[in-house]
Image 1 (tube, protein in one colour):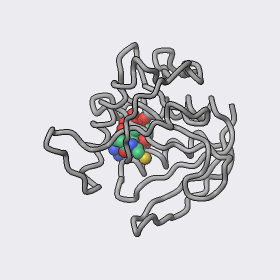
Image 2 (cartoon, rainbow, N blue to C red):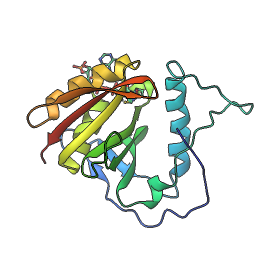
Image 3 (cartoon, rainbow, N blue to C red):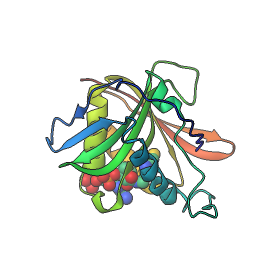
Image 4 (cartoon, protein in one colour):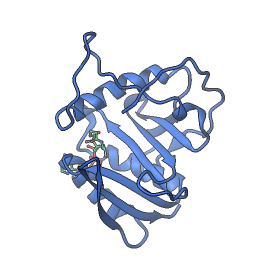
Amino acid sequence: MTIAVRPSPIGPMKTPVLACTTDAGVVLVPVDDGTRTALENLFQLYVHDFSSIVPIDVDDTGRFEATIADEWFAREDHHAYLVREDDTLRGFALVRRGSRVTDDPKPMDVAELFVVRAARGRGLGAKVVQTLFDSFPGRWEVRVRDANAAALAFWSSVVSGEADGEVERAPHSDSGVPWTVFRFTTTA
Ligand SMILES: CC(C)(COP(=O)(O)OP(=O)(O)OC[C@H]1O[C@@H](n2cnc3c(N)ncnc32)[C@H](O)[C@@H]1OP(=O)(O)O)[C@@H](O)C(=O)NCCC(=O)NCCS
């Protein structure tokens, strides 16, 4: 998690609001200048969740040293969304084009996905993922730390339900940390 916040204008939204086709109350709203702070605040909660499996401490201000890189707001192939359900903020999703484990520039990659604790376990994460897969049909990669048992169970469940055809599930090691990579294709 790297975060260097520079004052950079986000500019016009690169992508429209994504509407979930199975639940009209769920929308993915591209982050803009006015909502960047909301994303950064949610990111603190996300890192707090990860602090149970990754050694990371809060600093003396009580915050994690973790920010959202500027490329998420500057690049056309990076997409940062807030998740809203019935107009209440429930989480975020960061997706981008290009594999993070090979040089392949084509697949879409789920960089980060977060649903607030109070909204978990009732299908919201699955709706968010389904909306993303529908909006960016084609090849996808999802990387999950093996230590994140809940996320592994989540992705195993939703990928098998949403993929068109085979799902490849491959082990991956990054600096000795074991991950699982899911590779699959979705259709609109
Ligand atoms: C992972 C996360 C996004 C799941 O969101 P969610 O809204 O709770 O997930 P859903 O309710 O849509 O679950 C869909 C399926 O995933 C599985 N699943 C979800 N959470 C699970 C858990 N904690 N344990 C086991 N299986 C789980 C279930 O099979 C569920 O299907 P079901 O409805 O038939 O039970 C959410 O727990 C989260 O934000 N976690 C912290 C951040 C994180 O780890 N992100 C993923 C990084 S790779």
